[in-house]
Length: 160
Image 1 (cartoon, rainbow, N blue to C red):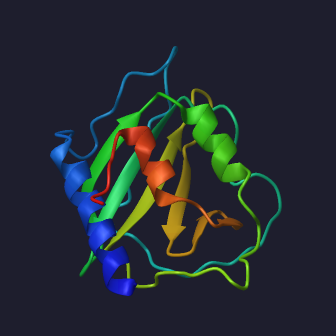
Image 2: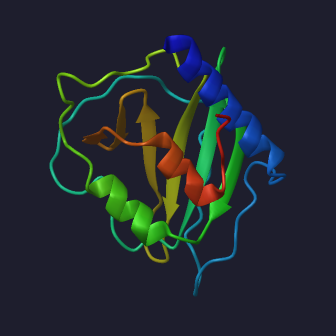
Image 3: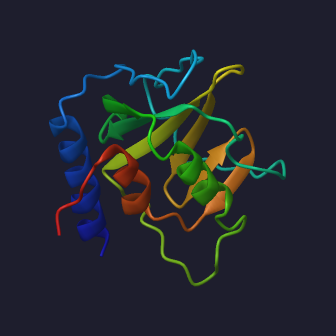
């Protein structure tokens, strides 16, 4: 199972890179200026610490930047921005469970990891890091996300 998940994650990186959008290129905002974010140069690991309650992603994001990092050094390999479906994505992430189910499986050996940078009109970007089994942003943590559903907002597809 672990090998399959690594293959799927690696395929997502290849699909994202094939979209032709160079790292850091921004999509137009829905309306008004966007406080632009940028992808961190390196994914910073698996440590998750739930230290606060509340939403994972603040409401009102105008666009979102998907950042993808590949093994072995987890440096930024690809990024892609979208303004479509950002409110729906925010709702999905905020609605995920705040604790991990005991019976859930987790692939700790994914070949590609992701960060989402949510961009706003009037506040600093929110950087939400995928940490294998969880997504976290400044101490708020959510579990059981479907990576295929998340990356679909950027038209990333996975091989079957």
